[in-house]
Length: 151
Length: 477
Image (cartoon, rainbow over all chains, first blue to last red; front, top):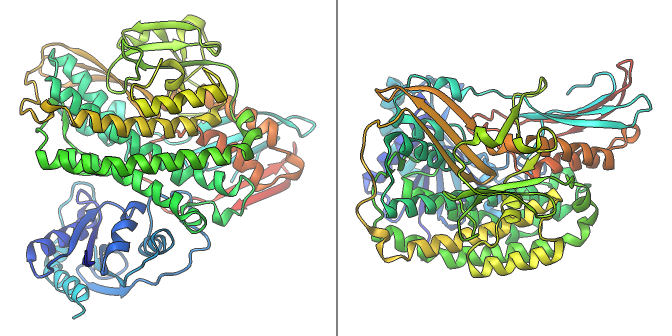
């Protein structure tokens, strides 16, 4: 089977803007422009996702960001660094570089991978997405589709 | 990092589920005099549930843990079944069994492959930076792939049945919320053969490594004690139901076929000043003589057989090699793998039943009683949820007896034994302390912080003399 793009929305929808990753992923899934794509949402990047990463043509991880303006959308390519220090004591969740690294060492394949970050206003339990985060969803969706299709 | 007079403190303990520390006490001669396992987190779930509607309890209780939420949902729903005075439809009982077995697969896979296999692959004195899943993947990629595949299998079953991998809401009072669909069943069944192959490879690999750890197998918590677990009337293993059986270290039956619900009749509980985790004991023998284990090793000790052919063959080989009721806690690792094989097989068998797609999956009722107890086997051992409600179904009182509490005294004995055997306070090394932590990891304690872990947790250990002067230190990145 020809590998397709993988879109991973990361975050907890019950914690305010931490849910922006899954919200964007849901919109990408409904969009229809990413034919053959696998779209998933996850609270954390767990080692099991390395299977999906290794099988994808390109990976786009969507996550909330702190330290930038609420609603700001940016992106960066994931560097597949060598992780000499390991994933730390809680090896059942990883950062994007760690997930890609694991896909490489365990499954022998690492596709190009990107992280799309959306500036978060808050992470209060039970809070909905903030206004700035909601307003950023269309822009983030376009960025995800652009990265996944190489446009 | 701590160090008081005559103490070595391992804080936090790593590669377990939660926040804890170990204190190793030294005598005046600087030799290890004892060790204690302390749970340093407090969640308060028994209090925050008071006032909530009974029907919300399974979903609330699932939030106790991000690793074993299903186990809490099953025990919680069973307690609510009793309050509603209903029995779930037979197919709902089987579907609860399936999701509970899937929980056991994914949790055991995490414990063995992600958390403990690094020590078994590289050795307890191996390079610290390699003793993690990345190191395993680089040195033994098939082992890492199998661990990932098994955890993924369990999580996928949970996601298919419950709608999501963590905190699914499918197990409810009276049964489950919706029936299984044919494509869901077929998707799970299609994945069973490869999952069985993965755990077979894990078992074979583990046995190739055993000879290298004969010393640790003998010294990691080998104190003789009781074993407790749920068993079907047939003598087969039970995970979501069954009756309680307790055997002593020699395999003699102390209790059999007893209703697990009135736990206050047979279990005593003690609190310690140095930990938030209470300890339980078998009341008939008192404390500490009534100290017991629960979980994979204890379950294999109490059952006659698992109830699936290939897993029972593996159990027979296991018993032939280590005895009928092995006491070495190191054997929890192999017990976990054997249980994974059994659980995958049973998932296949249960989902192959012709009535598994039956549409009647929930018995509906309101409050018909004011008290309920639900008991099941979680990955780490016997789990008890006990609720009282008022006539409107609002919770007035909650008591939870969790597997790690059952094992608390056993874990304290294990760290003391490992510390006495391996720790040389005058010449401290990371490998010594790793062995003490590994004694705890055998039990795979779940301290319920997996949904709340923040950042990386370094391990630093200091050894101080009676005057508080720093003698030695070890730091782990």
